[in-house]
Image (cartoon, one colour):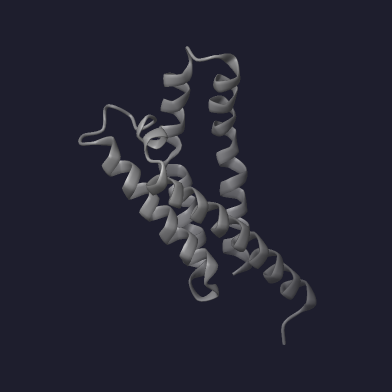
Length: 131
């Protein structure tokens, strides 16, 4: 028999997973609909075309979203989300570097993205533990 607190934790994890899956599905889709802004933050030091990285990250985001949405793959999806958030961090740092000469509101947006990785990783950990 499942304890009431375990059931509540699972339900909360399910809601978090659904929200995170929706966010990742939306962002992943944008990689294909409007790839140019994503191309612009790919570090130039990476080999190959930025568009390849844009599309690849879009595919990964859609895959992670699908894994989070399905209860059977949610735990693996949460781990994949953590890996994704860590992997895209260099792109966010590069965005700060590239936008440093832009108007201050754009710089604030770029800088704000850096610490936002922490709550996203924390939420993915909560999903993992609740699954």
